Every structure is written in C-alpha cells, then in structure tokens.
Length: 300
Picture 1 (cartoon, rainbow, N blue to C red):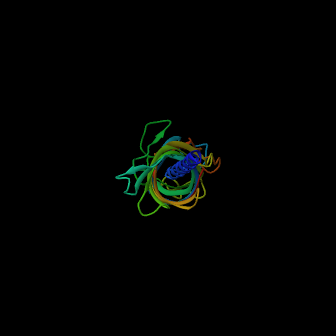
Picture 2 (cartoon, helix red, strand yellow):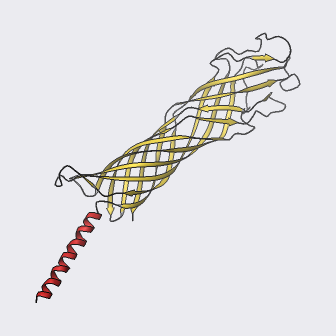
Picture 3 (cartoon, rainbow, N blue to C red):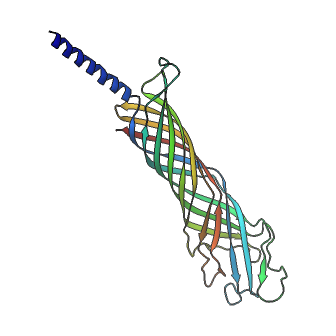
C-alpha cells in the first residue's frame, strides 16, 4: 500500500515538474527564424561628381585651344521610395520578471542576425559651387575657359541596390494584458554594400558649348556601374502576435542609417561627339530611410 502511494506521489510530482518546466519554457521562444518585406522612403541626400575633361583641338568638338577643364559639381538627390525584403535568425532568452512576480510584466532579450535587400532609384540636379578652372596646356592661364559658379550643371540618375547585414539586440515585453501580443524595441549595427547601376549623367548647362547644353551624352557611359561599402545602423519598434504554437506575425517601424559612400564611374567615351574625360568620382552622402515592415516568424 505504501509503495503504491509513493509511486502515485512520484508520478504526480513528475507531472507537476514537467508542467512547470513547459510553462517556464513558454516564457522564451529560444531559436527562431523570420522572413519579412516592406517599403521605405529615403531622405534627400547630397551627391557630387568630379573629373577632368581633356579639351583638345584634334578631338570633338574641335576646340581652338588645348586645355583641361576641372569639373566639380554637387547637388541634392530627391527623396525616393524603396522596397525591402530579407530574413533573420535569432535566439530569445528566458523572461526576466519586471516588478513583482504578480505584476504580469516581463522582459525577453534576444539576439538577431539579419540580412536584407533594399532597392530604389535616385536622381538629382548638380551644379558647380566653385569656379571650375580651364587650364591651357600651352601658354599662360587667362581664365578664358573658366566656368563661374552655377554655370555648369548636370542631371544625374541611377538605380540603387543595397545589401545590408546587421546584428540586432531585441527586447520584447510581456504585458499583463495578453499572452499572445508582445511589443518590442531593438537596434543593430553592421554593414551595407551599395551598388549603383545604369548611371546616367546629362550635361544640362555649359556656356562654353555652342548650344549651351548637351543632348543624349551620358558622361558615365564608359562604365555606368559602381559599388561601395559602408557602416549601417538601425533602430526599430514593433509588435508581434502569436497565431498558433511556434508561429507568429509581426509589424514594425525601422529607421535605417547608411553612412556616406564613394564611387568611381567610367569616363565619357564619344569619339566624335565629346571630349575625352577622366573617370568620374562621386560622393553619395549618408542615407536615412523610414521603413515599414511586415513579416512572419517560426520558433523552433
């Protein structure tokens, strides 16, 4: 009789322990995987274009004097929309109680590694803020070929394809009002690889030209693609809802910062229509994106 009683007590204790362990485990998802997509809007950011045009009498458009024109223009690229798609993998640790055990509040820290693609396009008008010097190869400098500020203008455009890799810290809040809906905040740092493609640079104003502008001449045509890498960081706030066991959906706002980058496009190559040039160096100012994201997660 005593043996049977001890066996029943042990079984009850074991069942209670397993139930308690399962309840404890539910305060943490452990390992999880997510996939997400959304949209973004960029800020207006700076862009520059600089290089040298080699004006020669034996080269189109057949100038009367051999000289080098040092081009240095800058301007602003307009705000544009962007698309985002990516995935992350993370681990959420056990809940840390906030306040008394009866408060119903808890904090669940997590670490995430994520990668996503951001695609957009940019365009803007550039002009020379300083006098551009036309330096003769023979004879004294006269300033005849100089372009005073705001005389030399370009309209530039290109596609932006960005890959972003980030390590995020996430803090999810358990509230007394729901065991299925969890608000969270987080942030992360990492790197962005940015590729500019289909670059197009049209000269829209130059008083040294007979027409005052150039139609159909892409100054990047020697190589219309360029790429660079830079630091990236983000902050985010969102809410996650558990649909069924292991499966959740989430929606969040992110503010993404990508540091300034430098690029080199190809030279202008139009043997019978345009003077030969050097490669074109460009500086793209830091980019900031306001983003809206929706995704789905699976906890293992």
